[in-house]
Amino acid sequence: MKPVIKLNTKANMLRCDDVYEALINVHTGLSPQESMRLNIKLVLFLTNHIGHADVIFEAIAKAANPK
Image 1 (cartoon, one colour):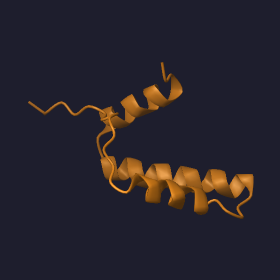
Image 2 (cartoon, rainbow, N blue to C red; image 1 turned 45 degrees about the horizontal axis):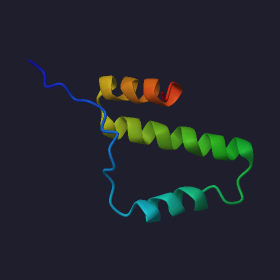
Image 3 (tube, rainbow, N blue to C red; image 1 turned 120 degrees about the horizontal axis):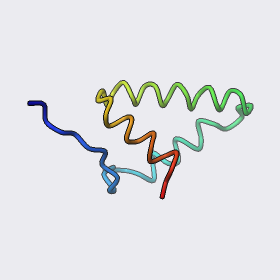
Image 4 (cartoon, one colour; image 1 turned 180 degrees about the vertical axis):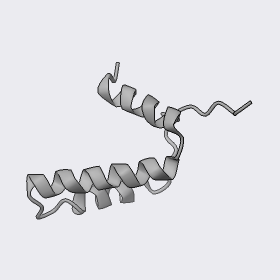
C-alpha cells in the first residue's frame, strides 16, 4: 500500500522573506507575458520537484477554490 501524501498548507519554509523578495525581484522589468511565462516555468519546475500527482491536484483545487 502506498503512503498517503497530503498537501502541507502550514508554514514550512525557511528564509521565506528572502524567497518572497526573490520572487518579486525576478519579475522586475518583465512584460506581463514574460512574467506569466516565468510563473508557468516556475510552477512546472516545482510540480516536477514535488512529484506526487495527488498533492499537485490538491494544490490546484485549493488555489482555484481557496475557501
